[in-house]
Image 1 (cartoon, rainbow, N blue to C red):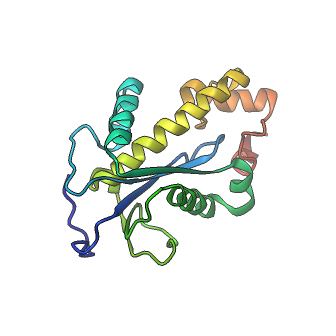
Image 2: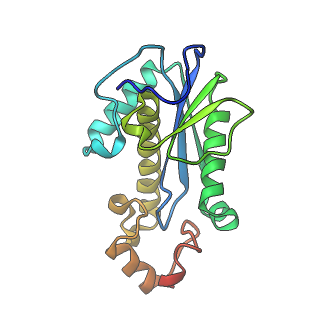
Length: 197
């Protein structure tokens, strides 16, 4: 996975990849991860998290990433923050928190997607479908997904009627049915659920 972007990154040594998960869910936080991999590090097992169908494989790959990364960080924005500021701004906040939690300050940032509002004046490039083009973004996508899915499975134990262990907060038929029948919880995004309550 070698990416030739619009920015010459040859002068940078601490390049971080950033990705998020959970922007479109009805419940749960939006979660972002940031990962700095060693220069030249490549592993075919690290790819877009959506391509790794097995939970066991995703968790094994997460361990691989954490064992090899120079540093990694996770950040989140809560359902309440999403309702207050909208999902785009909340995503930026989660990304900032992920970068803040990295033990090493990056000197360049690759961000998945086409929008970013910057971080501490550090140069960056947005990469559409970056999780399939940039290894550090793919690594961030895996860490973010595994972390968020784990959180939703834990919440399922407290709120089992919403089937979060399988839908991880997305608007599946069973999830929407439960919202209509029993209402929403503090973990739901009220602005996302208005059509169902």
